[in-house]
Amino acid sequence: MGFQTMKRITIVVAMLVLMFVAAKPAAAQNRYIVRTTGGLSSVLNLCLSAGCQVQGSLDGPIGQTFLVTSSGNLIANIVNGLLNFLEALLGIQSVEPDQVLPFLHPPLNYIPSGLNDRTPVNYYGTTVWHGYASQPAAQIIRLTDAQKGFNISGTGIVAVIDTGVDIYHPVLYPVLLSGYDFTRNQPGASEWLDIPTLQNGNDNSQGNNNSQGPAFVQQSTAAVVDQSTAAVVDNKDYAAFGHGTMTTGIVHLVAPHAKILPLKAFSSNGTGQLSNIIAALYYAVQHKANVVNMSFDLSSPSPALSQAVSYANKASVVLVAAAGNESTSSPVYPAALKGSVVGIASTTDWDTRSSFSNYGSTDAWIAAPGEYVISTYPGGTYASSSGTSFSAPLVAGTADLLLSAKSGLSQSTAASALSHAVQLTPDLNHGRLDVYQAVSAWVNNSGSTSGSGSGSGGSGSCFLLCL
Image 1 (cartoon, one colour):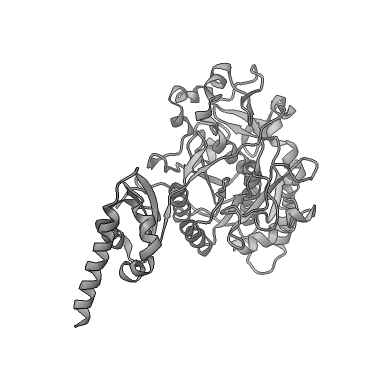
Image 2: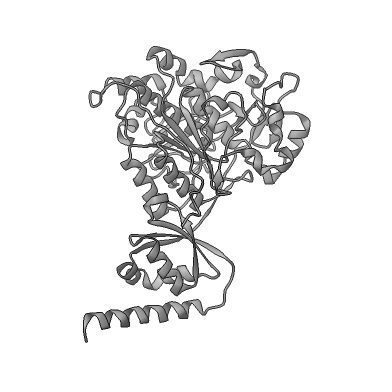
């Protein structure tokens, strides 16, 4: 019997096995992430046999990571028995469920006084509240010392994978790129689209909130907003509304001249699909981001996410991730991808570990202040919240300052510079972020040339669902 005959028989056997699996009763529409070396055709052949549907590429023009849907648990059954066979036949490397990631929000016990410190000050060409520019977190990490001492204010592009951003916010508007909304598969990354009744929230975009007092808009967030807005946002369906605007504002606080690429992979209810996160990471690299902030975590490893992280590392994109708010030393991802991602824990204003923060060398490379951090909030205003979500962008902004001080930054050199931190307790690994020390260590590292990094960004008309 010839090789070609054997190959045809093998393919027929494979199809019969897959058809048998497909004959099982369907449950609900399930989502899976498929990695392949065989491109789109291999995934189409898989789905032709298995009864699944290819929804699109997650890695843009690379064509090796795809989102597929199935009416039953077909792919999981394939993984259990036939993955090695399929890898040899079609180039399929892995199949995994498309997980839903939740945001976990530590409660806010009081409203910080900085939300009442609304004296307007000039901050690198933009008018901001004094309580934002001079808040304790900025002082603790010696931000001003580094900015003035090394004459740096940011460069290039920082991508923020989150719930989107208030695209009208007067503080952020000058530095925002158009970004992309992976929850809707369309250009732009506005948070306002998640709340139809507040889509005209830009009416408040001039930040004229001095007559309003700060109030809790969620158990985890206090903001300076009018009563009608607070009433709408105080709803579990909008539990994460403003999260992306806040993380973006913290990056801007540290690196005010960096362009920011907002990538909306989460909805305002605080959940996001793993597939959207992976697509956003590829998009960030392909649109010339220098640094990526990831203020989220998942409890189990993902082969597709790990591959996206590796792709970013090879492009010398610095990845920063929150260590998580579960108060555990168990690994969470992507922070636990040691050597590939810098994981950030949270500290109090008194340099102790925050009670909610994950800890240990697996998740945390360093820590940064993460309690009662003040940042920008939708409606041209400001808010305060706590969590490693708000520690991470302090470090992402610092990574951009490193690039502003000297070119040639990579994941490993950024991690090395950031490790020059204030030593605290062993569970916080290298200690608490000190921007001045980090920049000094990088500038005095003789492995790179002086100069500023740069990049350019934009957005295509289609990313996730283009075949």
